[in-house]
Length: 313
Ligand SMILES: *[C@@H]1O[C@H](CO)[C@@H](O)[C@H](O)[C@H]1NC(C)=O
Ligand SMILES: *[C@@H]1O[C@H](CO)[C@@H](O)[C@H](O)[C@H]1NC(C)=O
Ligand SMILES: *[C@@H]1O[C@H](CO)[C@@H](O)[C@H](O)[C@H]1NC(C)=O
Image (cartoon, rainbow, N blue to C red):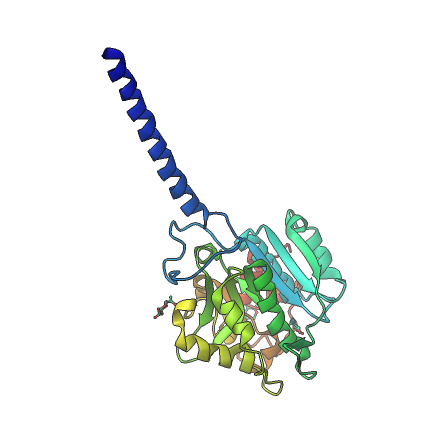
């Protein structure tokens, strides 16, 4: 009698432990579906504000730059790569390019402690077509760059930065989300700073939107206007960042004056091609200025602080 009770007690206990194990296992695999698993994720019903259920990262800590036909790095671009290195502390910085890197600023980067371990060059020809449509020869580097960033993010996931985007601080808070981008109220979305999982639904839609609908004559149609139309219909597909991924009109603040507010952003697009927007309000400067590690000291401007933060003078 005693021994039957004894055995039934143990049987119950084993049964109970078994049930617990099964629960624990399914709970763990539920978590594991997201946790440190940058592989295929089904985003059906995913929340664009709270992100992955346990808040764990689903976007790998990769930073991607695309550089076409530009073997040499400028001082400003070197500062931008350094900003990504120090402020994001990425596992990898990929430079996708069709040319061999040469020139002094690459050598400066090569000497920065720890940077060469994460910096990796990947050969990438300029895309010439999309879905059978020839990319504009006039805008080739730019339209090619627009397509390349979508393909790269669809392959690897991570953070894409335009070659003149400065990363102010870590974008880790966005790594638990499917896809985040800058999109100011009433404007077209921005494609200079994109954080995305490789299976993000909007990445696919964005690429698909080129099908039979590529406009070679328009600078920002496929890269901005058209995808914005799609997002207006399906705003749940991205996490919209109104200002902090950098906006229009900050270029003057960055290059013309002291502007402590730059620290509030996540990223700033320096728009080095648009220096003609700058007026000569600063008595010391006649714009456009080709900034370098020598003349920058003379300009009491926000960009000097940004460079001081990361560049090995
Ligand atoms: C990167 O920026 C430079 C300007 O500094 C520009 O000439 C080049 O085309 C850009 N690369 C891409 C892929 O947009
Ligand atoms: C999330 O998606 C909703 C629509 O479902 C949208 O109204 C909201 O603005 C989005 N939130 C962010 C932060 O983008
Ligand atoms: C010009 O540069 C000098 C030396 O850095 C600085 O003291 C002065 O404030 C600058 N002037 C203006 C208008 O920014």
